[in-house]
Image 1: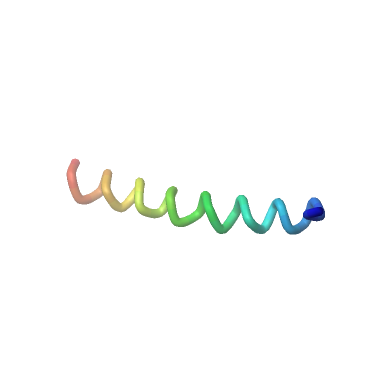
Image 2: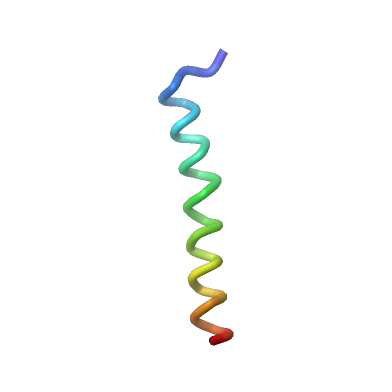
Length: 30
Protein backbone atom coordinates (compact mmCIF):
# COMPACT_ATOMS: atom_id res chain seq x y z
CA UNK A 1 0.00 0.00 0.00
CA UNK A 2 1.11 3.51 -0.76
CA UNK A 3 0.82 6.16 1.90
CA UNK A 4 -0.77 9.53 1.18
CA UNK A 5 2.66 11.15 1.21
CA UNK A 6 4.01 8.72 -1.37
CA UNK A 7 0.99 9.35 -3.59
CA UNK A 8 1.46 13.12 -3.35
CA UNK A 9 5.15 12.82 -4.17
CA UNK A 10 4.43 10.59 -7.16
CA UNK A 11 1.77 12.98 -8.47
CA UNK A 12 4.08 15.96 -8.04
CA UNK A 13 6.90 14.19 -9.89
CA UNK A 14 4.48 13.34 -12.72
CA UNK A 15 2.77 16.74 -12.99
CA UNK A 16 5.64 19.20 -12.54
CA UNK A 17 7.68 18.13 -15.60
CA UNK A 18 4.51 18.08 -17.70
CA UNK A 19 3.62 21.62 -16.63
CA UNK A 20 7.15 22.83 -17.30
CA UNK A 21 7.18 21.23 -20.75
CA UNK A 22 3.76 22.71 -21.53
CA UNK A 23 4.83 26.22 -20.52
CA UNK A 24 8.11 25.88 -22.41
CA UNK A 25 6.24 24.72 -25.51
CA UNK A 26 3.83 27.65 -25.30
CA UNK A 27 6.75 30.06 -24.99
CA UNK A 28 8.59 28.56 -27.96
CA UNK A 29 5.63 28.26 -30.31
CA UNK A 30 3.64 31.38 -29.48
